[in-house]
Image (cartoon, rainbow, N blue to C red):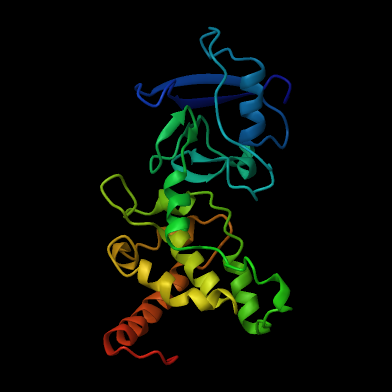
Length: 254
């Protein structure tokens, strides 16, 4: 039966960032345990649309194919998610594939996620250890803290949380939940904590915490189940303390 079964895809395409988008329908042979990526590979192998006309291969991003790199994010049947773990058998047909709207489209289903990476640069989402390699091992992290910090470290910068967030759009400079959660992650690190105040200062405006509307779409959409809203709540407390410290000029740890 599966040899004669076909799957219908309606794909939103765009040949160039400055050109309008359009839809194109494809019908491909069904295979058991197919995911969206394998279906797109089939279209690429034989780029003929449902009308029997030859067309250009569909363009999309991918990397690990194991839901680790975050590159294959797209909107599948109206839901932003990873296409490598989207199984065809679990999707309603016709399967509609669209690029994420939060980011500029480069071509077809591939988008430019620079907005998210720029936000990570803004909040200094790294541990500055250059030149300290000769100081010996750093301080140990408590096991209780390490456990929840590990959950935050699962972020693969896929952009799904930004796509799901209603406050991240072309009319807003809100950096989004991914970067905010990384602030909490790196501030929890014993070495990264040395730059805690600097990171908190960068998110105390409309681009940071003030831009969050607490819709909680992000935590529902995150493919890794990262507690993004918990991080945002914790950062609200941390920035409140940071504001008091800045106002009163105290250099003591609170």
